[in-house]
Amino acid sequence: MAATIQRSGGRGRRTMNEINMVPFIDVMLVLLIIFMVSAPLITTGLVDLPSVGKSRQQPEHVVQVIVGTDERLKIKVDQLEPESIVVSRLAERVKKAQGSDATSPVVISADKNVKYEAVVQVMDTLQRAGIQRVGLAVKSGAAAK
Image 1: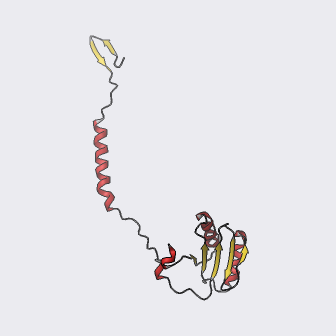
Image 2 (image 1 turned 180 degrees about the vertical axis):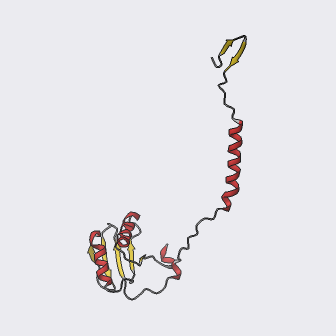
Image 3 (image 1 turned 135 degrees about the vertical axis):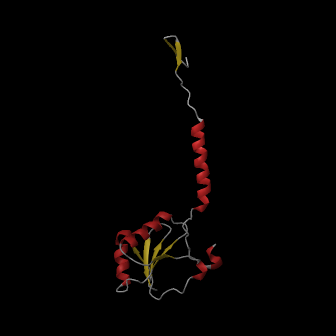
């Protein structure tokens, strides 16, 4: 039974078990209008990404970390032959290769089929070690497709 009737002194009392939805709808419509008006006014953060075509000439002393398709790491200093290395010794070896110039760049070259996680792990390892200039190698021009 939806409503109960109680008799006391000849008057009938009914308890209401319905909720008036009109105030709720009014409040929701006002909030909707506020968000619709304020959303275009919110400025989003702009990210200025570098374009590949405008890259400068590569510096003469570069430490290159190569992530192969099997996710094994190699380190190549300048024009020497790449040597295999494990992640735990990567930061130590890169600092040794940089020598006294802590601002010499470190470039990460990864095969396009390598998992994103492997590249991020290398970047994180280098940045946690305090290496300042870490970048990614990309192909430029029509070969990048």
